[in-house]
Length: 334
Ligand code: IPM
Ligand code: MN
Image (cartoon, rainbow, N blue to C red; front, side, top):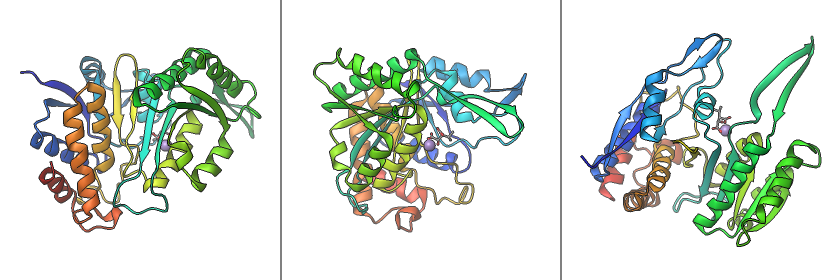
């Protein structure tokens, strides 16, 4: 029927409500997408968190998925479902853009940062043990293979979006071996991309500088090991108004999952108060990734117009509107 099938992981808490906004806006905009909703409720198999085969098959078959927030199951043995998804599909690069939203006032005006986070290893490798009582070891695993893959991705991403510079953010002064490997690989790989400038910055300095004045970061793609990317991306999100407004994409060779980074907000779940913007903007990244640029631009413009008008916005942004009213305003602005 000429439609693309996309896996939809609605997620927990506010997930289904914000996913509904995406579905409503997409049908109003005639996006040629059929949603395939899957359940990712995990089970424990031999002490490991496993996702239902149907969900895995769906993502593999469709190549792209859109994902709402997933609560991490409490209980011994479970690792975060979010991480399990990234690992299961080897989604090696996590792309996190932060762009100022017209009409939403923050202390900063023209933020336009892009951060690319290594997404499979580092401090997230999950290798931890007790050495003796009171002494634990958590291993930060850095491999040439995963580092090279994400670094090359960063250079190619910079080329594709027209940013002239790639900057490695690191702490190689302390993590001499792990971050040293990452940084040196960056220097080496930079030679293969002579049209992209390369430099490096210490993580703590980057934090200080980006909250002092983010504009010098607008012409750069920042690339870094996993945990640094987790932290610095929240910091960048804070510059434009928080995780309710920032998209992300987990990119792999076989498939990609686009997700809102915010949590499932159980306190407001089911009340129709949630802001669907982060999931919507993640879906725009997904449309761009699929080459559906016209639909992406049209929906994105309608979102930004609605936010700039500031009349029909949700409580987190200082408005009084319900989730479906905001979605309705976006549809009117299509
Ligand atoms: C993120 C989140 C996740 C992470 C959590 C939910 C496991 O904070 O996507 O940034 O730490 O990567
Ligand atoms: Mn995070």
